Image (cartoon, rainbow, N blue to C red; front, top):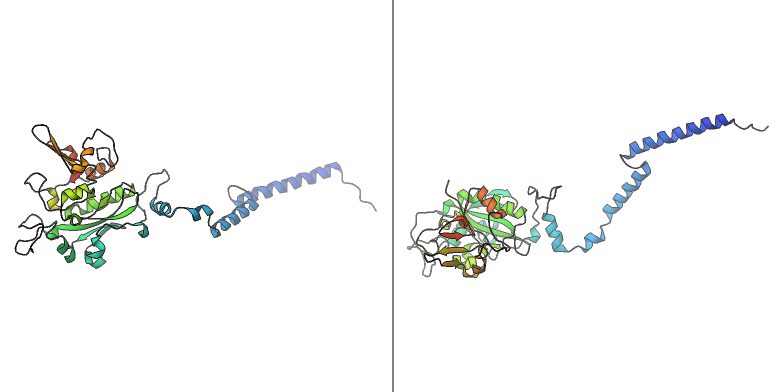
Length: 327
């Protein structure tokens, strides 16, 4: 017995039902699969993601190691600006200073129980006994009764004690764009300012050639400036005068001094530039790298923390110099 063909109306009815079922299934598939794509698309994307996690890309394998190390520290927000809050310092990228006292002298490489840490690599603490011995007779004057023959800095003084000073450790970018350790000695009252300022400079990848203790130059400030060394404490007088410098109290710091020299004017309109190697940078109308002026980040950060800038002085100009009064 032959089956009679379905009427056209029945065929249309079943076709509409089938199309409706397909449409409902498609909607549900999109809902289950996420905002975009079908369940099949979702599964394919998931498998591709798993494959990518298991197989490193050729581009990452061939990337330059120094560039990848720098990228590790380059934490930016969505708008491209530095966040500064979670910037990680890869230890293997750090270049130690010429004579890193933190590792050789300061608490035998360990930390003081009074250490105050601001961020990783940025901290300050009282001077250890070994560090006190290291600076005495160089940046800190030795007592005449205790100074051996040939001591560079000898004298009686009641202006600053060892207890007033703090050892400061920082991280910075050098002129090659590499991370380097830096160290300073300063007055306790500005130690917190310095770690905060230098961290902000680091987070912005502001370049400072070197930050080492003045002991590396036998306490010779002129030699330190000529070598473009950033330094702070040094018990000495102002160059060309008999007046005690703010550096003698650990309340002043010189940043990239070769490119930001000290200029003293005489009554005849002449000038003396120190260091003499920085004479090419005495003309501040010229644009050049590492120049500190009111538009420079370094200037803005120090002045925001209450420091005054030697570039604003009248009888002389000290473009490298920032100082702060005792609270």
